[in-house]
Image (cartoon, rainbow, N blue to C red):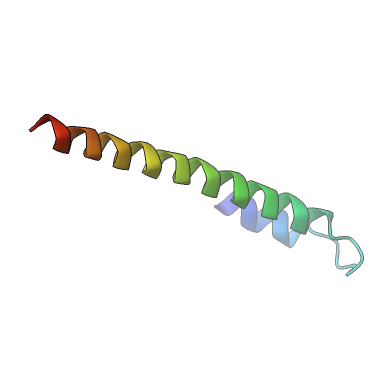
Amino acid sequence: MFMLVALLQQAPTQPDDLTLNWVILAVLLVIAAILGVIVVKRRMREQDDDYDI
């Protein structure tokens, strides 16, 4: 988290340079996708456990 803060503080102040914003957005989307896959796998595993009883 501290690395992200340091990166944001070093970001250029030009409003035209949106590259950093796109990179941060892409990283957040990847994290959200990974967490979504983990949640779906756990829910599928819970449903399988319910059928075993």
